[in-house]
Image 1 (cartoon, helix red, strand yellow):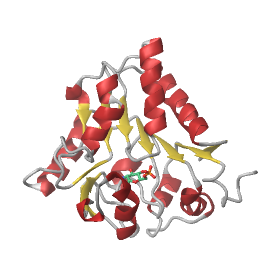
Image 2: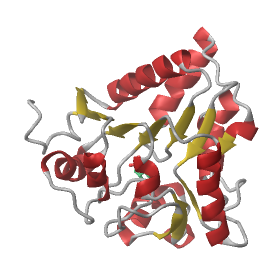
Image 3: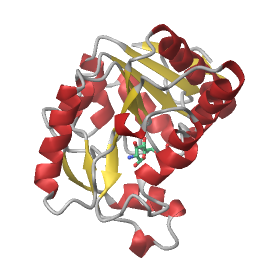
Length: 246
Ligand SMILES: N[C@@H]1[C@@H](O)[C@H](O)[C@@H](COP(=O)(O)O)O[C@@H]1O
C-alpha cells in the first residue's frame, strides 16, 4: 500500500488529479471507477480545469460509479447521477453512453444489481477505482459487517452514514435508507485503487486501515488484500496513524 501524505484537502485534490490525468493521457480509453461524496469534489474540479486548459479528453473513457441511492431519480439533486453531471460529466467531453451508475429507481432492484455487475464485466473491468472512505470505514456503501465476498447489492445504510450524508438533503427524513452499491469483491477486482481521505473525522478509519488487521467491522481493511492501492491523505486524516511520520 502506497501512502502519499499531503498537507490539506487542496493538496490531496491536486495530487489525486495529477495521478488520474497522467493515467487518462496514457490510456485514453481506460475504464475509470468513480466515487461521490465531498472528498472527490476538488479532484473533479481539477480534472475539469485540466480538460478546459490542456484538452485532456474523456471521449473514449468509460466510467462506472460505486453506488447510487435507492428511490432517487437521476434528476433528484441528491442522486449520484446528478452529482456526477454537476461535477464532471456535464463539464468534460465524455459520451454519456459510456457513463454507468446503478439505477436506484429500478423496479426490480435485485435484477439491477445483477445487470450492473454484468455491465462491469462487459466493459472489461475497472482499471482505476477512485474511493473515498466513510467515518466508520465504509467504502462505496459497504457498511461495517458487510462480508468481503459480496458483489453489487442492495445496502442498508447505517444511521451514522445517513447522518453524515444528511447535509446534502433538506432533512434527515429525506435521506434514503438504502443504496445499490458495488460490493467489496467487485471493488477488489479493480486493477488499481486510489483512495482519498481528508480531515480529522477520517483519522480513526484510516488508522484502522493502516495499522489494523483485516476485519469485517472495517470494510476498508479489505483493501489490505489488494496488490495496487495508493492512498492520498492529508495530515489530519493521518493524524492517528503511527506508521506515518508527522
Ligand atoms: N457512498 C459514499 C462513499 O462513496 C463516500 O466515500 C463516503 C464518504 O463521503 P465524504 O467524502 O463526503 O466524506 O460517503 C458516502 O456514503
